[in-house]
Length: 150
Image 1 (cartoon, rainbow, N blue to C red):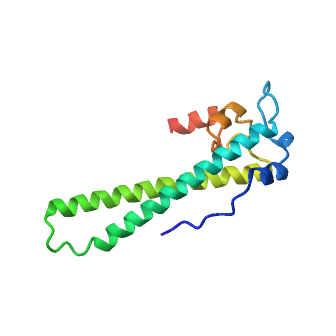
Image 2: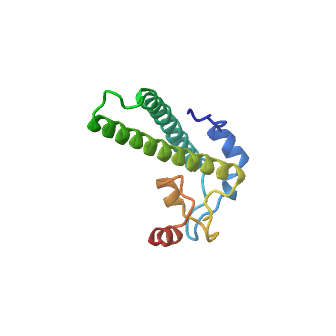
Image 3: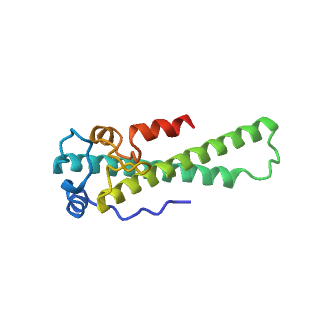
């Protein structure tokens, strides 16, 4: 159940592939600098490494739970219930980490292809400050608020 790591893009490679001048900024914001892009890339790679570690650990935990679950013989209902709860928790953590890794990979791909910073819903700029605070953002604040109300 291990996630196959994608090709890691070094910060320097991504910065070379997507000139910082091509990245979108909101009106009134300064253009991206190479140092700012480097900071975002570093954060994304750190988050990816951390998430991959959690995913690997949780996968091992889940494999152990599935291997040891047996048919319930010799276990009372409380043991079976606790095991089911723990298994469901591990699955939830795994799914959340997989989603997070997919968001990180998507952000890295958007940096490489020069679309980083553009809202995937309305096409407007997301805002440099929002992206520096949450580098995986794909929606501007207005579209994100609209999505959360649904």
